Length: 239
Image (cartoon, rainbow, N blue to C red; front, side, top):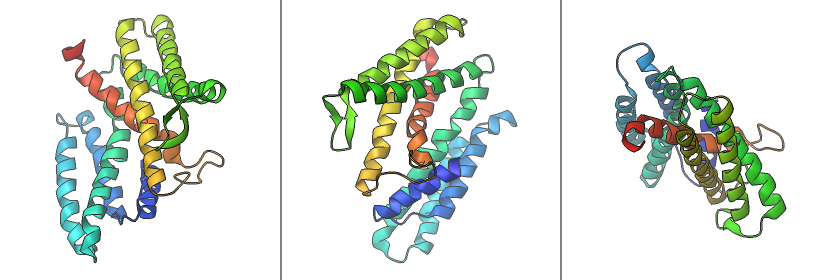
């Protein structure tokens, strides 16, 4: 899934006039995913080390593979961004699930429930009641009413999840996490829309007929998962 999403991201980059280094990007994403899982096997998290080494290696190897140096900065930057955006974004699911076995499963269920309900409610409320455009320069169809509908739907599903299923956690904490996921997910959707609009593309791919590419389906997750992971990691400071 990570490699397919990264492939679609690199297609967007090429349509935008950039020349990324896809082989390095695929290898870097695989390395980040393995690093995120490293605490399961050794008493250390190698993610930061891998990201730093990958950034430096990309800068170095980019010198060898870039013929026109006017493309060097754009190509290297697009490659590193792709690994952080997709590789790191998706791999955050690993620490969410396993860093705290007592609530890892509930965190993932909450994440996916909020992302799905947010998208569904935003679509139907926006279609039925949408009057005011949210960010017309980026997405001409998304509305303020749809965005608020998605947020309300996320709050309701979080309340239901806390009330009936995740009863060991404070409901207020669960609802706050849901708000964070929903807002981050909507920002992720807009960010991917901006990339496509800048590249003059409607969809990131044609993998899913009628629904675009895989990146179109997981754009909210790529922001929601890291946001939730950070919130959980810093929970002792804000709760």
